[in-house]
Length: 388
View: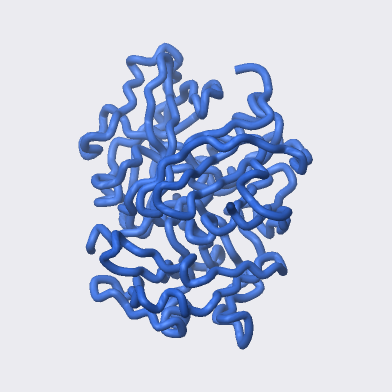
């Protein structure tokens, strides 16, 4: 497959598998070229402390983030004492943190965690496996201090990965070293508390909320905020939508409509907000029908990906997604990706998620670029507003 057409679908479908509180924290995100293949994931609740807090008045100041080709978003996380730094994808479609181990034989030039160099390392050794759509990623568990945007959490369990063969070109070509999952503990492999949960439990942050601003065009800026959201990143007021499941960040899908009328093109009733997926994804047959309705053609190297005539973008229909009873619109310029002025890609791909998780639609970065998204863990809801 052409590397231009290898999208990041890291979050969903895991098949398995300091003292003082801060009001909020900003973390720069860097965007890099799409290099991951269909990667999927699953797992069970762990009863971490979840303060029920209001976030209505939280504000913040933007922090610069680099953008490259509207693709995968990552940022720095450090592990150990002294800190060893890795670039990880902040992934709301999974719940585990893993980084490459010094014992990894196929991790290429990626930096590798060396526990012997960390005075805060805590041995564990439990075998870790997560099964992605393209193959397995495996290693073992360890504990150490994790520093995320300058905030430290103690004794965080994470995976030292020794085999990344399951990610293939996604990892060898990609700029990310690991993944930091931000979904619920219910789907965490081995029921390990996610790092965000640990931040809350150790009192490092006081607000049980985080938010993503993803850049809308190459060269603009993106931001993740822990413990709040930034009103300067969106227009109007946030629209709050309740969660229907505390596994993925999942809300009720009431339909998908072309130009706001006619019958819905989907029978699925679930929508998952997933920063680990570059594009949108849905059941294969429904994506094919949607592609045909806007004049997109299957890409010859992968029938689940589609290209479209760039000249048609201004006249493409508006697609409306009804989430939690509210309609959110995407225009052609939102859902078509111009790849280096070489071709235009329809920003959807087909993925058939098996029951009981599926069928569902993955609202990836194509959607989150258009709508500033607040993940309110404490109140079990999502907030959306047009990004600016």
